[in-house]
Image 1 (cartoon, helix red, strand yellow):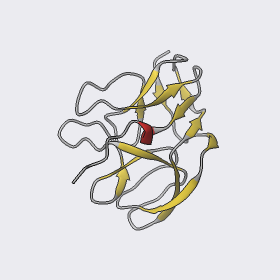
Image 2: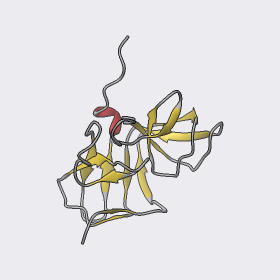
Image 3: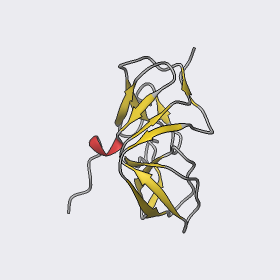
Image 4: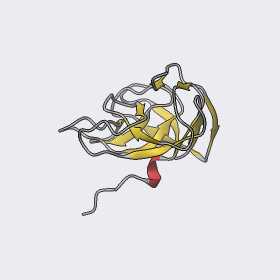
Length: 129
């Protein structure tokens, strides 16, 4: 079975939570990065937005939502336990292989065929300057 980052996502465990104000639309479980504010992260060539957090709520630009730096999500299918999970080329989504465009970013690890541990902030490189 091919890997799929299914929505709606089921988040079963999280680390510390905090609030952020969005600059774009996100869905619960989306990877979040910074592009002139908090938006859905992606590895799309030319517009790569590294992931830092995981959204715990749906929201649109201007909304204040809960986020976390670590979460377990059980709504994926086709994952392989112990394999890396990447920031996907589709905004907010994960992938089971480097999308081969933009900057490949490992954001977590597959725990089983249907469960992934996301900790994107451990892998993100913040801007310096």
